[in-house]
Length: 550
View 1 (tube, rainbow, N blue to C red):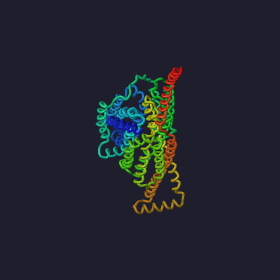
View 2: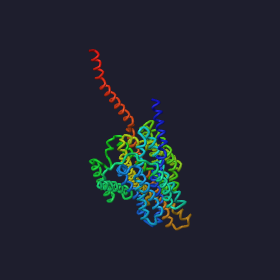
View 3: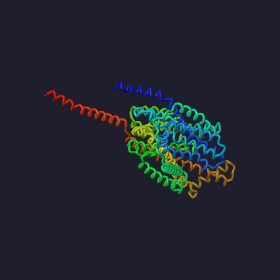
View 4: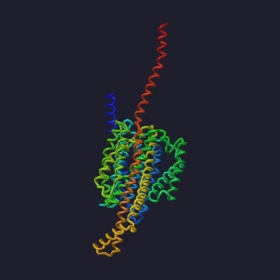
């Protein structure tokens, strides 16, 4: 038994040495595509000034990118089967690199938007494509290590993005953000041309234009409606129309895929219970995760006055922890299975999310930094574990459909999370502001007397008319009231994030290691095969004994 384990370990190490250059190329490709999604947030104000466009127009650089991603990810399974991993990866990197160059040299906003959409075409298929390649390279017994290395790019890039973007814009032009992607993209492109091979044979799967249109309209409308709900409100006619139409198209798309002999996106993956459970946990976890990514920058920059660079710097240690822990968590997954990692990681995430419900205007930078680091540690334990636990149950031929489905649901969950927490933050801030304003009623004799006394002191000390002092004091009190209301609104949003995290914690107790099921199944098959051989042998032995007795 020990010899078998040693041989398996030795075989894995040899495989890792052979595949390491390829894995690094794939990880770097995912890293720059995920990094690219977060770089532009800080640069938007500069783009508005340079191109002289409205904020709502500039936001289409983010919205358009998200929509193209959301549309292409569900189609990635078909593209992988039809084109093959090698050709599709090279094509994706060509689009991403070309789009980056176009964004960097863009003389106008329209050219910038076109470049951004071309970027999104490449980035949209990279995540599910690279996941499919990783799953094909590594067997289930050692898949945790492979997915852990893959997780480096996913986890490290989003947190380093705002910090890097803030530093670049502070010292250089925003165009450098895109110029920097070009040499990296070219290096990955050249290396992949020589090192990357197809992980499975391509199939001439028929292309259904109707399915593609339904998928594009369904996921595109749903994502747009959900993303706009945060700013427009959930009752807005456009939001409701987009969500309802999107859901209808998706339902029609699902029905056609279930009935099709060659589905573009195979929904049969949900017949596997662990894949379904891991997808559900992933959705809940992604929604909860976006609470910190969305709410903390608002708290730090808008309410505490920190710069985007300082805000991003706070998240950097957490990103480093996630980057270091990702391959370690992968190794632990291979040794102890998913449940301990998921439960412990989710428990840490839930507790630290609750701690963020206690924020005040005096909470120290160090306290927030430590909390975010501990929260990042918890998430690093469970993110890849949850995904790998579900993917391990799927047959090899369904890997591409599983990765496409997992990334599609995560994309929708991310948009949903931002909209949910935007709505909670906005409505609760308005509620608390109204409550605080009730306490500053001039009809209240005590408040009126205190206000007039303070205004007189301000007028005297500043040498200004009493009317101006009254106006200054009113503005100051209103600003303080809003700050306090906004902090309380953020705390309320984190309460909901804690509840959502707690749901994921409960679900994580039901995660099981499907590799044990597969091992038992193989053992049963082996025993049955041995039994069949013995049964076939017995009659011969019986006949020989009978002949001997005669």
